[in-house]
Image (cartoon, rainbow, N blue to C red; front, top):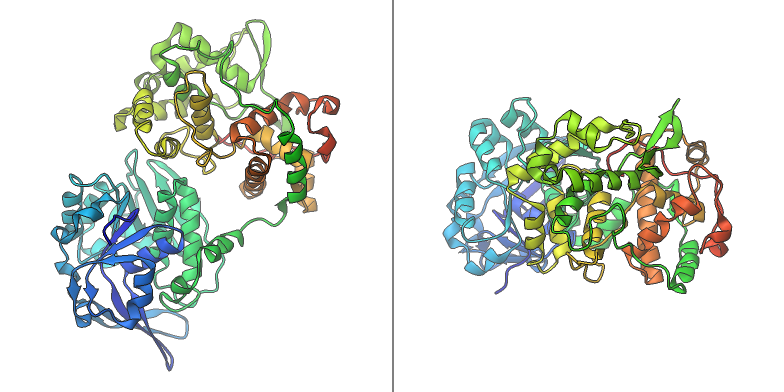
Length: 602
């Protein structure tokens, strides 16, 4: 091996003997090795650095065929050996432990070429001080994002050292018991730009992005051996992050890997299952009440393919900055995070869209929001900067969105205010600026992916695993006449999944609702629980991806085409089917409505 893998895992391998009743299984083990093999099973390009027994025993041959194992040679007897006994209830007890030589692993042993990895994970090896030695060695020599994990004894013995280790990492993993020991029952302090993952067994995992936390559920499984569950989630998530996915989506992938791992002793399933198995396992939690109609997707894709007017919006016009305005990038970053929540409920149902008078014109929420920020550009441009957003007073936010009648019509104005100030605070603490991020993105091999991963850390953009507002910002930067960002060949772009697009998917039949109860909720426009909303939105997302592939139309073009449905197939009036381009292929399921759910995602 003479090249760096994308993901490098540093730590130790072990020989694990698992005993249950009269049965015995000997399997490769070690948290680091579990993490590495799990990352590979999730599609990652993975290297492993740790002591390597020479000659390599048959026990480890399959592991070495999965990951690029590099490390100082040693005797098999030198690596840790663990004897683990399970009782009838499945509880594990360490009957014997030989810790071997892993505490002698040193950063100076690392070959220089391994330092080119994009992600470097430090498994729990010996103690936190050794992990810190590796971090101190790596930081000046590598541009990699660094992650680490810990274990219970270390958290009990040295909570301060574990907290210091976490502070030194970009991503940190621990379980709920370890978190209790390290943080003493208080919420963890996660700095802007950092990710913390707390696994909670059957309760899933908490994914912290700065001070924002989301719960990721487990995947259904029939557990046989819980060994390696947390490390498998870690590896699967690292593979997701390395592939450019949102942290919550990456953790969901990790949960799928963990579910596969625990259904057989030790590392057995990780060594046998392939990526398709992992993908299929995650699909087991998909909501079967909603599905993509592939025949309908093909039918509408053919209509779109034959039209020459399915084109992206260029984000210019009355409510946008003039072409060539040097403040445009800062304006887009500040304005687009407010593209959410433009509707009003009444008695538990959707009641009306947000409508307001602006300079004599009646505008809907999205246009109104852009118009409000265009006025800011003309009158108070300084408050668009990160520092200006951070220092917004309540009366400033009220003034930004004031209409012709002197009122602020946005339904959740306080949420807009808190997101704006948090965005400015975190951007300022990170030392970032919109223009600076864009300039750095342009230097990257995949600028869209790089920028999306930065937006995953900014309030107003970070919260949505499907990245609706982040994707809208990226596409705006790419479609403006200035071409601020090279969108490439669409490989890192995804649907801008808002309620207009969901309504279009449902009414046209791209997405079918087979469950009578869910269909009744959508038709009655009732407020939905998160599970129902997420189910519909996820399937609509898949449908639009398929539509883009089959039609040959870009994600940006499809988004703008269906955004026009707010006029052709609106919320407050009967559809104008006669003037709709896809009317010949439409299912005309016009009773259906988008999920009614209050969120900052869209």
